[in-house]
Image 1 (cartoon, rainbow, N blue to C red):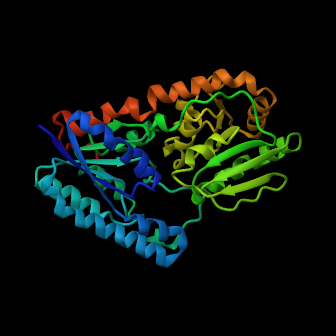
Image 2 (image 1 turned 60 degrees about the vertical axis):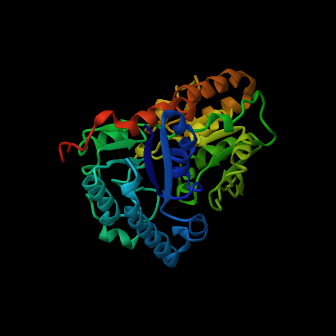
Image 3 (image 1 turned 135 degrees about the vertical axis):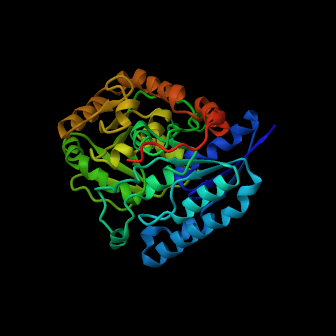
Length: 370
């Protein structure tokens, strides 16, 4: 018998979290006897035109319509067996839409699953705090977790938090669709060497962590820092290119990198990150250097399938090692892609997604409630 699942995503496919944690799995679920439907919290038009970074008016439209759309999804619950809620749509405040979904789902006998891939129980230390955070509901995430039949976390750090409030917690890593990243030979660097980073405007400040290292490398080598999807960034002594992100051009832009970097601060928010950009570099055949924070240290075996760099000296050493002898890293690139294939690809993880959706009979059971 076909199982019907309603995915309530936080954005349309243009949003990275929804795309990588939900939409790319949908075509695989049919083979497991699962019929999936998606209800996005935002239309593609609103998502493109009203990003929260656009100011107060954009924030009101973005979050107001997100909450309204999620409440409207209440009228669809009766037609599905499982409701898969991705993230909380309102920042900081009481999670009214998600709690309504959980309570009505339970009343109708539906299994409710909650998915998250960021440490939304804390805040990032690299961005400025907003006045809106004065109204924060500190236990908003635990309130939702305790009402769900299962929680799907993007890494072990997030799963450990969730286990305090829900008995049934699964770890499903953020995955990439490996067929989008055709294998390529890699044995040389461009001139100048392209050190690449892909992300969003809110995460560009992480590049400050490696700015001293980039300057030291630039004193000896011709390099360019290529930023995809971020905002204008100034790094004295280093040439910087800022390129717009597009879904169609994403892979080709990553393949234009000679080295991919993922610097992170060692804080509670960063330890909740799921390593997406790192996995994209590795899938695309780009040597990767990352901070040894959170899941990065699980993905990378230092010196085997990439490099981990904890300080400026470590970053300089790793970057210069790749630039000075790129041919010696061809095997590292192959091992990196194999790491993705075995543990972080949609192709190897869709059976686990199907198993989670089918549930093996689990139902809501409160955790310790700490």
